[in-house]
Length: 124
Image (cartoon, rainbow, N blue to C red; front, side, top):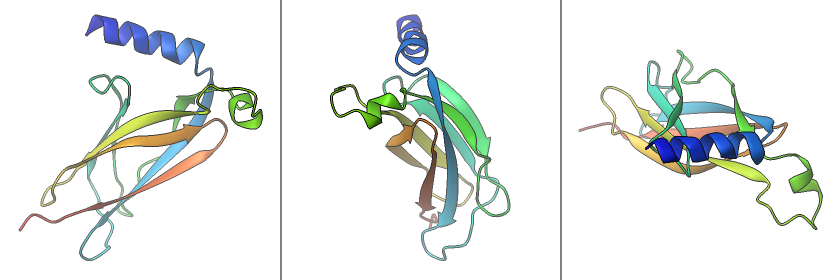
């Protein structure tokens, strides 16, 4: 695990010097009502065991907007650059009375806000 943490730290400082933002909206898959007090965990997709952020949803089913590491904006502006222009994160969401869900591959671009909508299925 120490090797994963070290490789993640190297990734954050070398390949992702910029920041992008993420906000999560959580609703019920049946009623489309917002789900409050849900627990959200965010990790880098390449290192899923290393939790970066822990959030909860408000009465509107939304998390606060957070900043996450992202590659330089130049990666997405120059077609000559072959590096991936975004970072990928994994989101785990769970709330009482609902089935937990994991979403891998949420993309974060430098200087932009990504909005991840998630619908949870109620437990019968």
